[in-house]
Length: 354
Ligand code: NAD
Ligand code: TYD
Image (cartoon, rainbow, N blue to C red; front, side):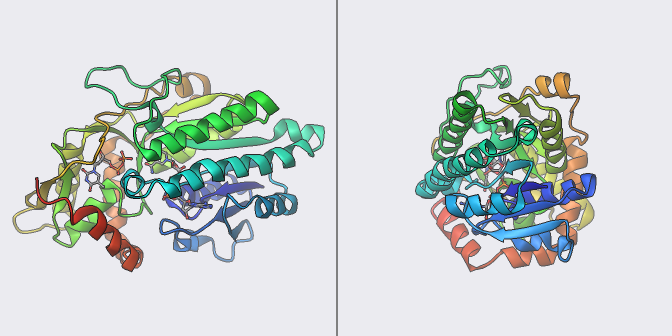
């Protein structure tokens, strides 16, 4: 079996569901259930003997040690993190605690477990660390995309904490020989994404007729990766990646934020027409401090060495995503808790229209 951290979050839940569907191999999910974790994301696995859930913190080394001793996984796939740049600006402490200290404690538990394995199991064991393209910093309009060799230059507390965790993973490979794999992916979107991130936030606001907040001039560029494609790439890296290596994963879909917002408006207009159209709801608001201008992934290595390329175009992935949110109004209503409303107040009230 495998252990997945952060399995109740957006990408983790998609990964667990996709893993069991694709491989049938049992999974235990370890998740602290922060505001971003939602057991409802895994509800379709209730009663399925191939999935177990453990409520716990990756920074609790003793608890992780017990879990490893009990379940004896052949791999750990590490998603658990604080993941939202805007939250890291308002409160960086949690990012250092989970992303840096938590990853360190998890590595320590994994190292102890791995060292005690029999030779063949030791050889087979993998620790796959899921990271982000944001560790590479910001690109100018016509710079080449990030490769695995691009120097690290993180700019936000979020990306700095992820960079620190990547370095720790690298050190555990180099120093102790732990068979690690690191993936650095671009912006994900798809089912079960918490509506604090751009795409689900815009869909949720639009359906309520609320303003669609576009930071600054809306010309920042992200490379959008459909979450199902990302999960497939992780499965491929886990099975065939070279221990110690890193792999960039992207969607071949660079778009300006305003283009993304317009594309969502147009997809919604077709599915659920609104008088005056959804584009009329766009509102330019005060920019994010230190806002990175452009991220772009060169995913040639994973294509060349492991034969993976994204299946979805931005149009097909976005169409699926919009359909999912339209069909899952109850999920959206459930995650919009009091805590979520407090976040909207904290992040958006001070951003008067630009
Ligand atoms: P998310 O915020 O939706 O989910 C994170 C999950 O981790 C939640 O279920 C949360 O409860 C859990 N968690 C947080 N702290 C924990 C702790 N201390 N112990 C155990 N569980 C804890 O995040 P996501 O978007 O699914 O991202 C998953 C991973 O992918 C993260 O490592 C993130 O940095 C990385 N990533 C995400 C994106 C993206 O676009 N979403 C892009 C690149 C990389
Ligand atoms: P986000 O989804 O937070 O991902 P990241 O900052 O990790 O790339 O934001 C994606 C882009 O959208 C980013 O350039 C910031 C911008 N954005 C807005 O313009 N308005 C919003 O309300 C949010 C949440 C993001």
